[in-house]
Length: 261
Image (cartoon, rainbow, N blue to C red; front, top):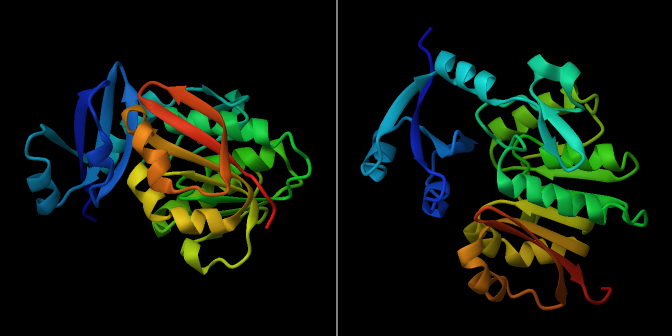
């Protein structure tokens, strides 16, 4: 059987990365040894778009060894994230797969910390995780508040498959609703909406994110140099910024709806 393969690119930690995240075929990223490592599908069109970068080709075996070397127990919003092969060393288990969100990236860690603070409000009963990836935020929410009803969505079936595997690793199979249904097709609103995706996509989804949020809207994936223009572009009438989280070059925002519907 032929092995799958993909591209790896290594950039400086302070390199602007937003445009790479928006390329169709972007698979994930990780920080390691003072560098940012990006992964992309191995396709001729992607090679052309990334011609300024030095691309290495990884096979399945290379990928597995890379992630096994990199993913050690990591503090994450009150948890310790570990891969399945180190499950006895942590309390939130994430199979790295192809990097759908592992808790190592600054956006994921920051948004999780803000989410933990919000979940202290026990009157909140429902949460929607938009662009769930590995499911790490949905899993963390359910571990923090076992009583809250969590729905996690992603437009990538492979990500949802990875999330389902991670739910099973954490004893949460069947306890979080997973779906590839587009955000616009969800009819009911949720007390909390969390979206950790790139800023351009957040802006595109702004109206739907607001419609789905009854009380809190938690957004992440925004570069600090974008924050001045990001909030006006979101046009969040009726929402008030109540908290901000920053790590490295990334920023997360927590908004609260000003008035009931």
